[in-house]
Length: 312
Image (cartoon, rainbow, N blue to C red; front, top):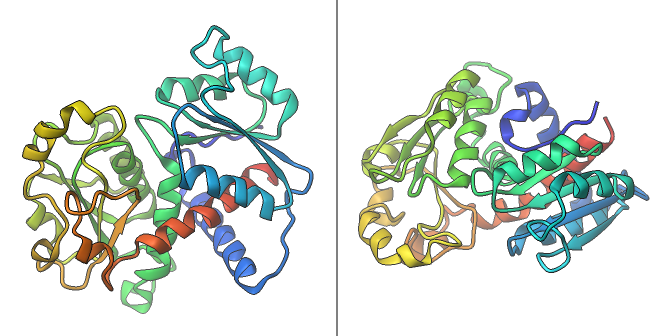
């Protein structure tokens, strides 16, 4: 049966652990210079309506390191939205490639691709979700915030770990909320009124076992947590809302003043960052920052995901 990866809760908790273990193993092999051509002669098709740095480079590099090949198809190369039905694109590509990564605007588009494709479809980002980012986030948290013996002897490295999301309840926040629910991380989400994550995402996180706490008080949200995470306040397509959003998000910047409430917290940001807006330069470049470890882990997590999907 073909497995797709459209959001993080397409995985079970044990599958998430297996996938992160595989990502960690690939990371170690790359560090030691050990070849790992596990997807030799496999081809990845990459459909991108939206521009990208980390998603594109990490998938293309990852596929090369796994011995395979990636074909990038940008907005000018594909027929999405220009007359060809998505179901035709999905069925045609399935005859050519071994997996598809789609970075598109509408989540319904990636769902339709998956409905008709006979090869795995991976969500490289939609307006509703960014599950590949969440895999890298969880890998980063597991590496840096494993409480070891302090979690009561549990084998789950996420037991006892707490996190706060501060800022916009965007696609990254929504997938992260589901990822925390799946992993068992105690999450608090702080957004200004009107910028929260979708109710159905909260319900899905609750069904996974750990519903996030929701607040509009960033200082209360970060108090005593292990990880503080943020993203841009103004995403692609929201530029005309800039003045309104800058006013609405006042007080939600991750800076030293806010982090005084979380003296032991590591800081995460999925990049690109707008320094001085959602995060200060001092914090982004400071000792607490896991931002560039997090960015690197996009490569390892996506290699683990592709191998897991194609070698099952």
